[in-house]
Amino acid sequence: MTDGVRLVVFGRQGAGKGTQCARLAAHYGVPHISTGDMLRAAVRDGTEFGLKAKEYMDAGKLLPDDIMVGLVAERLAQHDARGGWLLDGYPRTPGQAEALAAVSGDAPFTLAINLDVPESVVIERISSRRVCASDSSHIYSVQQPPAVAGVCDRCGGEVVQRADDTAEAVRERLDTYQRQTAPLIAWFEERDKLATVDGNDAPDVVTASLIATVDERHHL
Ligand SMILES: [Zn+2]
Image 1 (cartoon, rainbow, N blue to C red):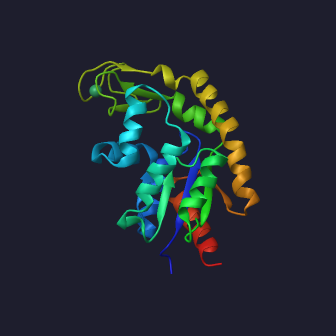
Image 2: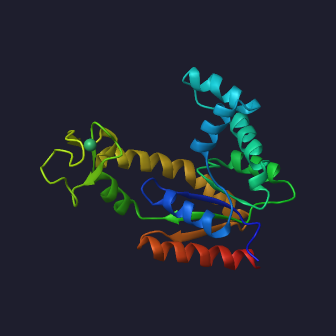
């Protein structure tokens, strides 16, 4: 019943998108395709579009839409994506959404999910984060600080707030996200493909609500 889901998930930074995407993909038995991972894999494997992408990345340039579309098409053509897929972080613009609809061909996507967490919550979450300056996988927060203030429990490195994580920096990124995403939300809405799911709850509750939303649409 549940094979063949083709999902697009987007949400603000700090909305718990990565975690929820991994859970949804596992639940439906489809690959979780995040653009960052996809890009790294294509470059590593030296695919046609991976090689093109590498030229731009080496030159420190942003990837043009047609290369991103090519990368996505290459990835969706792989064997494991035949029974469905979950795209995380793509498309970002209505133009990319058009292109995705085109490469999806006779298997158009099921639903786009907007994982919605209020800005104030996200700002609070991110701006309370602290990381070890020696190893960024050692993560703390204002609520869960290291035993000795400013000193990493695991390696003794300095625990700091990243410049990217200040409330002001987060607010700026969220404004940009809002501006870029509004037309995308409208695009999916016009095609009756948008579902907004409240992400401001315990992770298990959010997962259950995501699955209920997808099942409802998928069995229409
Ligand atoms: Zn550390």
